[in-house]
Amino acid sequence: MLSNVKAVILDMDGTIIDSMWVWKQVDIDYLKKRSIPLPDDLQKTIEGLSFTETAIYFKNRFYIQESIDEIKNEWLDMVKEYYESVIEAKKGVKEFLIFLKEHNYKVGMATSNHIELVNSVLKRNDLLQYFDTIVTTCEVPKDKSYPDVFLETAKRLKVSPDECLVFEDTISAVKGAKSAGMRVVGVYDCYGTCTPEELSNATELLIEDFECIVNNYCKK
Image (tube, rainbow, N blue to C red; front, top):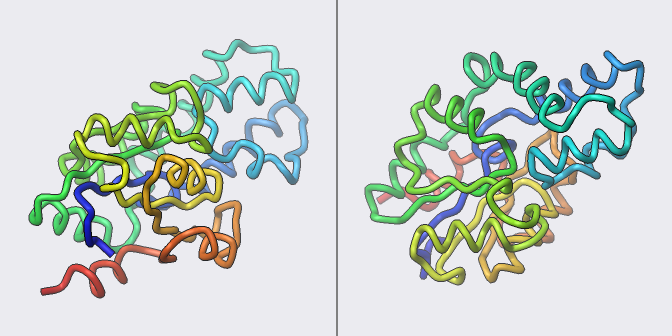
């Protein structure tokens, strides 16, 4: 799996931390407060959008009166406590990161989340120190269905795209990573927007957590 790989790029939500359930509840509560029912297609539609793009989408689709910044700040207030005290890393993540650093792999993160929440949850789970760089989609022109965030992460890690192995939990992000010329491992999340079969067909390997990676690929 790690042959010819110099860098590993990880998504955060739904990939290395168990947080997707929080965001679905935030969408429900945010819209309910405004007497708007949750559309069945919402999660799939906003998949891979940056934090700002998602706020713009909500404002336009649901005719939200608040500004983009006000929408984002309300979401941050709603999820801050979860990221600071509730959300946990998936099984085997820390062990995998330790293995990567001990074996001189570069480690990056490409995420659609807000950097404040990223830093908060990674620090609390004692993971932040293992990342050489973190890139959010707010820092690049396009969302994760495009190669931009993956290419920028590789650039900061000083590696070629074909030397990167990406871990992702959504089909749109898998397509973005592949279009960047990178190999992709799928991480199935039960709160995600795709079936295990869809993710398996789109990636070279499918996992549910990182214990199997540690046990099968990281043991001496």
